[in-house]
Amino acid sequence: MTCLPLGNVEPRAARPQGSNAEPGCEVRLHDRTLYSSLFRYDDIMLVNPPVWGQPASANPLFELKRAGDSGWFATYAQSFESVWGTARPWTPDQEGTAAHGPH
Image 1 (cartoon, rainbow, N blue to C red):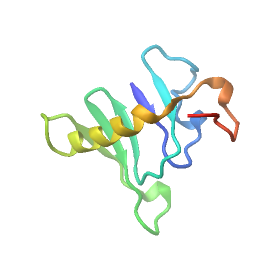
Image 2 (image 1 turned 90 degrees about the horizontal axis):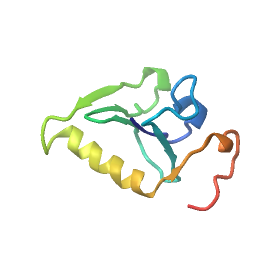
Image 3 (image 1 turned 30 degrees about the vertical axis):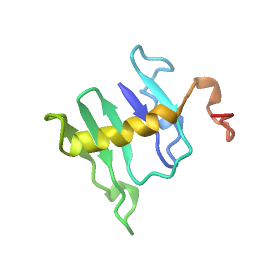
Image 4 (image 1 turned 135 degrees about the vertical axis):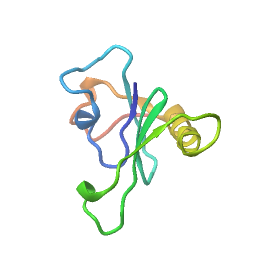
């Protein structure tokens, strides 16, 4: 499982419940401006795009499944991988800090 907290998501909220270091799970942080939250789990991706003027709770959540080398999953996966490759690993000792150090 790979998680990429986007926007104002706190690492505490993105981390799997009840664990600091689940085997096979990695959380990374970035400073890019993105317009959707992406959570990737192997061949499944959750995409949460904002809807202008609506509270976050009213925004849709799309579940995309890999269905080949093209399509929505492939498009979002390429975007995800681009950001993931430049993001820095998050560790529990960074929780609650405003500065995330060099990247």
